[in-house]
Length: 167
Length: 446
Image (cartoon, rainbow over the protein chains, first blue to last red):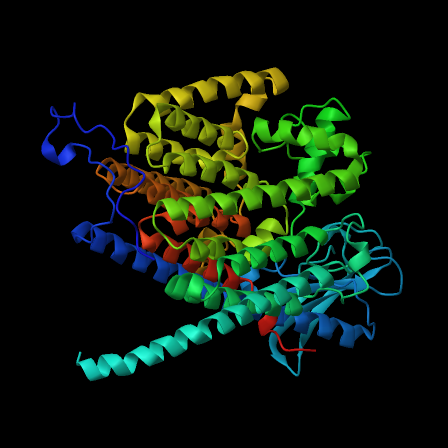
């Protein structure tokens, strides 16, 4: 597609600006964009910005895939450990630190509405083998607990939970 | 090139042109099939991608299967590939590849398919209706209250959780435009919103055609670039977003300015329409300084000032001072962070967990620098339509709250701008957006 010469003209006023230095005076709308030095610099900057955005996008995609794989493995680990094939199992990657790779996976200990029964929370760590990760510890939460905080936990087990349950 | 080589190349070129319509037809069919797949599967309840909504497309629900991430992303990729093929064919061969009537039929078919289906991928349309019902049915000011104020209203359960406490961020003209839909009931209002979005989209595409003609571009390629774009069809039109109404105002203003000899009345009208567009969704206001700088006449300035005054009076009369202060709503929304924003992705690239307050300030600074550069370029003769498009693109790139339909804003301007880099950049960023959605596709199949 190539642009026709300036057809949206009704050219703007260019007189009355003589008091400005020539480099600062306005110019009429051009029919074609000139490919001068400024155009080349702009194009270079655009290419660099695109390279940065593309790198960031790919990096974030890979990061998301890793997180999703970890989530899938966490759920499989919880179901295998508890022998419950419940759908409503929550995975928290924040409680023990996003970068730590240690996730807390909570779900009901018996059938019922989500969060309506005593919950078992497992601390899942390490790499994925056979679609599962390692259970390094955990704790229990009473029914209807909204926030998994230290004060409400009980029955902590495993070394990784040291200091995470009230004495 | 020798004469023999030239004559040998000619039949090959002709053969390629002969294949072009068949290939374009195939691409058009693929785009349509992918859209039909998303709509039919989306009509089945309990999809994680489809917002909870009344059974407005229930009659389609027996034809598909529940829409999952994998099928959705495959359909999206097919639509993207078909779009890329059509874009290449129409820009290279024009009507020889896709005759005008076929292009219009394809665009109409895509609109029809999306129109009859469910609301796709976004709860925004339910917020629009909630704000309208707050004003009309409950006598509440939507600039002061969030939808939670009408939690007993039947629309409330469909409003997105994140927006239940949030007063409207849309312009007063849009809010008033949506008021007549409120008494139609929830389902009636959804259908009215759908009609509004489809009519606005059709109007935008018609104006893109006119602007492309005015500038000597291939109009078929121009409307294909906008109306077959998968993000436009599935996310923009599929969500029935008011961005389409804003884009209609934007293109109406551009079309007025691109008429051969606009004259003071048309120039004033164009500037007034931009202001009206900004009173629908504020983003489009960015066109105004470029329009004024390119023309350097009194008429558009007067048109803009008159429209601002009239708009302020209407907004104040309808909603009080909060209806006038749309900058406050914009500042509030600018603080949000979406996972798809480029700012968030760059933060992750540099090992940060997300965007910090200082990053918001840096991004605003970058946006100001870009707009100032574009204003200077326009002053010195750069195409104001392209400068406006770059500004809209810069807004979406520097925003920490990026949604698919935000990167549609510059698209109609890009196809009629004189700087072809704008179209390339817009499509490149849209591609990155699509790539960022693909993570569910890269998980092992159960």
